[in-house]
Amino acid sequence: MPFRPPRKLDAGELREYAMKVLSGRALTVAELKEKLRRRATDLEDIDRIVAQLKEYGALNDRRYAEHFSTTRAASGAFGSQRVLSELVKRKVASKVAQKAVREAYQDTDETALVTAWLERKYRNQNLAELLQDPKKLASAYRRLRQAGFASGPSIRVLKRFAAEADQLESLEESEPSAD
Image 1: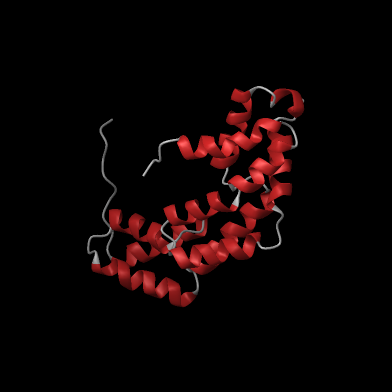
Image 2: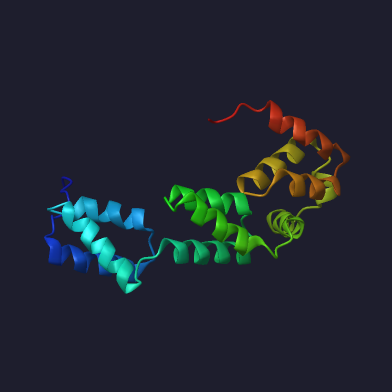
């Protein structure tokens, strides 16, 4: 069956579509605009609809960022850097995202989060034995960094299990940047 682009919607239908989409899950302003852009017959309708939804309180990037950050911080599965990068990827304004993440993680001990994360990911293994292997140590460190944990707390926790964790800082400096 060939791909058919979605049917274009007039202003009234586009507003209904926007409300239906937002009832399913919260979106940032940029995410909603992108969805509406694909369906709008007249692109000028998008800004009017977004303005109305903001006025009604159905669309608010600050509230979205606060909720997103708070739930991620409470889960313990992600560090603050990962949450911040996800918000920026969702096109939340940088200052709004930074403030939300800072507030969500302000009372959080990142060292405790790192410890809990390691225990969860390596629950069936003896971390002290496993991390004696330099490759496994480097792998655990990379996984922590990908989960958004800062290098300082990550290395402090890894030092509890392997003395070679001090050398991980040089590993980070020697890796080529993805910029």
